[in-house]
Amino acid sequence: MSSLVPFTIKSLQKLRAELVEMQKSELTFNSLNDLLPKYRDGLVASGAYHAVSHLLSGQQHVTDVDQLDAARFEAVKIVDTNIIAVDSELVPVV
Image (tube, rainbow, N blue to C red; front, side, top):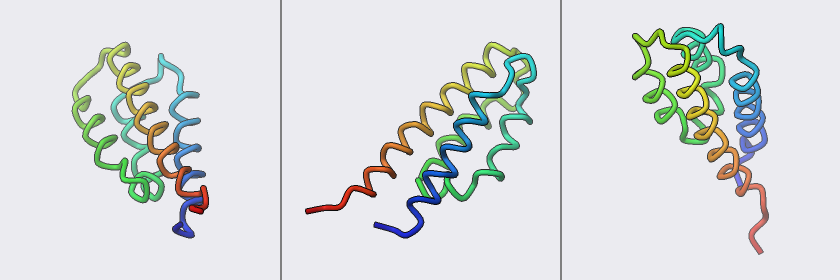
């Protein structure tokens, strides 16, 4: 197990919380994309950076709040999957 696992999980959990707490009416490409550098450590360490970055880059010119909301929850799914994957590294192998 990497000694970075607890930090990676914490970063991903914070990212998830911030994504979920965002108000739909305030969603913009920039508000979503600004989270990438803020949580880069957890995203890169878990292998999720490319997937989330790729998802969000496709929304660069989108102004439809419903589409941005859908992209936000797709990002949450990616983060959830990676939290589970990284968390499984905490289980000692017997």
